[in-house]
Structure formats: C-alpha cells, structure tokens
Image (cartoon, rainbow, N blue to C red; front, side, top):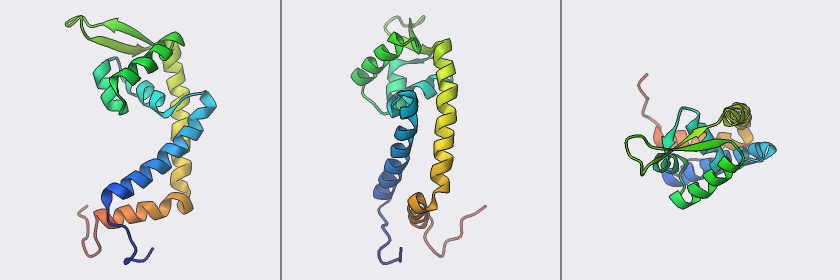
Length: 144
C-alpha cells in the first residue's frame, strides 16, 4: 500500500487486525464446539480461580452474559463455582479436571491457528505493516 493511501487511524487498524485474528480463532475453536468468549474464560481460569467480575472484564463480556456462559460450562463440568471465603457475596470460578484437559486441547488449537495466521502474509501481512508504519513513523528508528 502506498503512503498516500496508508490508513493512519490506529483504532481502525487494530479493529481490522482483531477481526482477522478472531475470525481465524473462531473457525479453529469450532472443531471443539467452543466459542471465542468461552476460550477467553477457560484460558483466564487456567491460571487459577477468579471472581466473576474479573473474568467478565478479561473476556470483554457483560456480567449477565458471563453468568449464562458459566452456567453452560458448569453444566458441562468444565468449571465449578465456590463462594468466596473472605466475602461470601463474591463467587469464584475454577476449572475442573475436565476443564483443564479442555484448556490444553484448546491452547494447542489456538497456538496453531495463530501460527498459521502469522505465516499467511497475504492475509495479515499488509495489516501488520500498516500497523507498524502507524506506530513507528518512517524516519524514526526504534531503540533496541
């Protein structure tokens, strides 16, 4: 893309890049009947239990949507809930043994999907170059 037509709107570039990544991720996760939001929740919980509002914030979804998602994950024995010890109003969620096994499978799928996407220069290379040019304008050498 020539400089005269190169988009310089960082938000637009990031949005286009995010759509490409999420589209590829959604297709890859479909093999395990898992959505992107579910993956974000499961991946976050792989590091240990969290309260619901932390999970919702990390996954980028509303609390009511997270509650429905967690209800499904509980019904499928992927996560379980525990009342907080210090504050009984807060519910913490954790991966079950089955959830941890699912996380390992999904992590491998996501990693392979991301590697394929990054190797697909025709699909994403131009967006990454536009992003680089926007973040590091020509003539400015980044410090190493």
